[in-house]
Image (cartoon, rainbow, N blue to C red; front, top):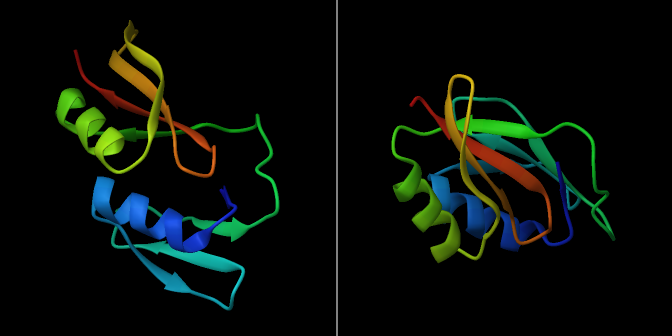
Length: 103
């Protein structure tokens, strides 16, 4: 994913999801201790569109509260879809992700 401010991104995902990170220079950090692989690259402007990362959480209201409390914005309220329910949010850099749970 992309970030305009790696330190703000660290703070958001650490606070909202308990993730930690490994820095690789000044322009890239890898996600650590999150149950998945990935990272953030520092950019001047986040590119919209592309693949959406969808994460699982057992309790959608708890996840939504943590996201908002740490500076995220709910971009699509919780809705039903085949397999469960989910909502979408943007992080402080403007990346859009989703969180889903079983019905």
